[in-house]
Image (cartoon, rainbow, N blue to C red):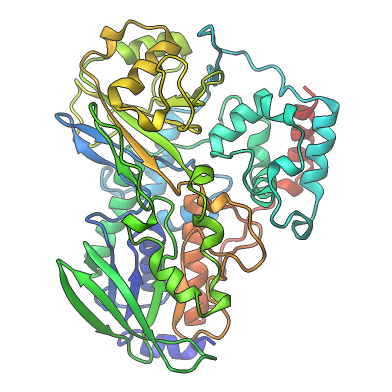
Amino acid sequence: MTASPASHEEAAIERKAYLIGGGIGSLAAAAFLIRDGKFAGTNIVVFEGSSALGGSLDGAGNPESGYSLRGGRMLTTANYECMWALFKTIPSLYNAGKSVFDETMEFNETYPSHSMARLIDEQRAAVRVTSMGFTMQDRMELLKLSMTDEVKLTDSRITDWLSPGFFQTPFWHMWSTTFAFQAWHSAIEFNRYLHRFMMEFSRIETLAGVKRTIFNQYDSLVLPLETWLKKQGVHFLTDCEVTEIDQTPSNEIFRVTAIHTKHQHESGLTTVNTNDLVFMQNGSMTDASSLGSMNEAPKKLTKEDSGGWQLWEILAASRPDFGKPEAFNNCIAQSSWESFTVTLKNHEFFDLMTSFTGNEPGTGGLVTFKDSNWMMSIVLAHQPHFPNQPDSVQVFWGYSLFPDRVGNFVPKSMDECNGEEILRELNGHLRIDPEIMGSAICLPCIMPYITSMFMPRLPGDRPLPVPPNTENFAFISQYVEIPEDVVFTVEYSVRVAQMAVYQLLGIKLKIPPVTPHDKSLSTQLEALIKTFK
């Protein structure tokens, strides 16, 4: 059940909206409520359990103790219809008179992506990728998978459809590290990625379609949006955990009546009136993240150490239409990887990498050490990567898909290593003098649920943005179902938020459709040619 189109405009000034979670999805929902729902910003409240907004799009630190990024999502212009449409309306914080979109596009015209060292082998040589490495069997199996209906892919893994040799090809090394896929992940998600990013298939070795923001994604995307929302009067309550949601007694219709919170050790209760709306971010891919240091490895945490999944589990226990969180958070070994952020006090490492790869910082992509036991990759962004970063400091980011494996140069699994040991492993792959990293600060981060949205699933495991028989409630996260689109993208969070706001308010404006690049004959031909190289 949703409000009628007429009523949402009449009541918008008085109605309130409560958003549970302060990630990019909630921030986007708040913007759509104001821009298209005619809500007063002062009638919107965002509850966030941590001290900062932005969810997984984070970025923090300083040159003295080091900067930290848990990760960054890949961006393109061809596939991010809802996201860029939103950021065309959000002013830049760094270029007066320009939108975030304009600013980003101009930046990428100046620093276009074209990686010349996407893969590095065990001899510290850049692999010249002239072939995807497919056998005819690989091609036939990949074609069969890409043409199979999702109904037949249900709950299956990528390994159920592709032979072992496929996972040793240059294509898989590049595709899996670009999008963070593991061989045991969902065949449905892999299939969706093949279609959604078919344009990137033919340029996967250069990542020429990737767009980057002028700084890290928190400062470039989250902070401008947060600033704009604050100017509209939106209330942000950080360090405020939502512990419980009250609902109407009826088991047929779900309507939120109150929200229980804990803020600075004090319990609170917010009454939700009849016309008010509630949007909830169900699940969290960065829940239970743990940061290490140069001397200590990150702690291994689970959802029991944090509250990112608890509320969804409570709600879903009595309502099947609210999905099954256990489908995504029950196997940390299959959804975890580890990232690290390195802060340097000199330019020597960046100069070495520029000479080695042929790419100026910000123009290359992931540099993946394909023979690394950890499957380690690093990326050197354009500097500065933080607005407060001095000219004498440089920052780069890296991650590994297999943190539970013993290193090639450090006889420990990555998840047992501190920052100094991770740098030692990296130095080994690059064959460089450890003194180059002598003053570096490496901050590792374990994320036990980072690819949990890729776990194999059954129909109904992910709820719809507005589940059946709900009156004033919607889910906005990476764990809701949108046909054709792909999770683990900023676009997914923004699209879900727009769909939820429009449906609850009965807004008739058109949501940008998913662009069917995979239906383009030229794109299909380019992908086919690439497959046979």
